Amino acid sequence: MGDDDRVSVPSSPSGRSRGCGVPDAGSVDPDEAANRSEHWADRGRAGCEGPAVPPADLRAMGLALHEAREALRTGDVPVGAVVLGPDGALLATGRNAREVTGDPTAHAEVLALRAAAGARRDRHLDGCTLVVTLEPCTMCAGALLAARVSRLVFGAWDVKAGAAGSVRDVVRDIRLPHRVEVVAGVRSRECSQLLLDFFRPLRRGSRD
Ligand SMILES: [Zn+2]
Image (cartoon, rainbow, N blue to C red; front, top):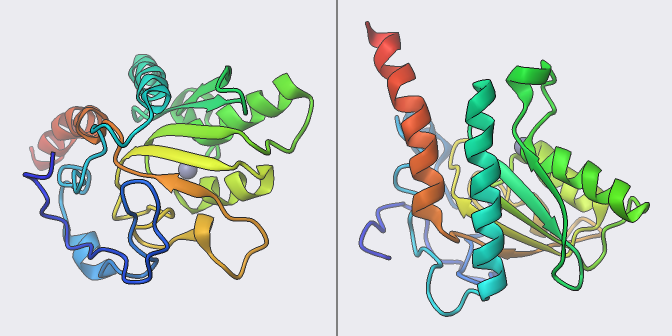
C-alpha cells in the first residue's frame, strides 16, 4: 500500500475528504487522465486495506468483487456492487450487465440500488452503504444522490470517468441538497487488476 502512489492527484487542501482521503473535484488534469492507456492500473494511491477501514467494508468489498467476477460470464466489464442496510446487513447485489441486457444504464451500482429499494420497498436508502469495485461514473453518482445513500465505499479509481473525486465529485458537491460520505481505495489492487485483466487482451487484439 502506497508504493504505487503515482497518481497525480493531490491531497485535498480543503480537508473535506473522509476515510482514506479523496481529492476535491477538478484536481485531476482531464487531458492527462485521457492520455493514460491503463487508467485503472495506477489508481492504487493510498489504498485503504489498512486498519482504518472497517472490517465490514472489507468483507462487503469481497462480495462486490465476487459480483464483478460474475459479470465476466456475460462478457461484461467486471464491476460489482452491493448495498448494505443501516444495520450492515446485505440488502442487494448488482453487477455490470450492459452487454447481456443491451441497456446502457445497467451499471452495477444502478442495478444494486434498484434491488435494494425493492427489498426495502422504499426508494430512499437513508443510512445505507453502497460498496462498488470501481469509482462511480456521473450517472451512478447521480443515482446515489437520488436514492439518498449515506455512504459510498469504492475500490479502484477511474480517472477517465470517475465522479467521486477523480474527474469530478458529484457525491460531495456542496451545491446539491444531499452528500455522501466516501471511503476510497478499498481493496483497490484486486479491483483494478480485474479490469486490467479484462481489457488487456482487448487492447492487444485491437493492435493486431
Ligand atoms: Zn456508472
